[in-house]
Amino acid sequence: MTSAAPRVSIAIPVYNGANTIRAAIDSALAQTYDGIEIVIVDNSSSDDTVEIVKSYDDARIRLHQNPTNIGFHRNHSRSFELSRCEFVKPLHADDRLLPHCVERMLELFDANETVALVFAPRRVELEDESDEGLRSWREKYG
Image (tube, rainbow, N blue to C red; front, top):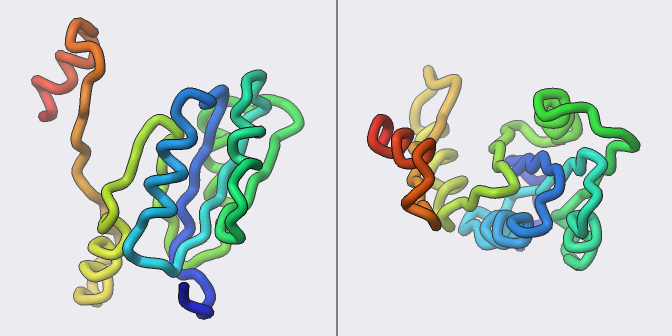
């Protein structure tokens, strides 16, 4: 692990994400680029989300707990506000990052002075192919 200040905040807004938050955190911790902090903003969950986050003993993880639910969009914005780094990579609590995600995004950004925004495509993996809404999203967007 580098001793330099982290350059990228991985911002994870979450509400009642006990079933998925561990996979999201593990994917953030598995990044090949080690100059990260992980900012998790819990939106007053009523499940075990906070306990799961607190079970991690990693200085890169910071947990903020909203005293009341502020809604999805405000919680997402709050995760950006609490980020301390030059760049913010949003990660929803039910998503995962591939191990080279942050490293490759930074390489692209650093190699191009005129680039102001870098984003990555999504890969949708369906657990239940019978979900019509997800299936139509996948057919439309791949």
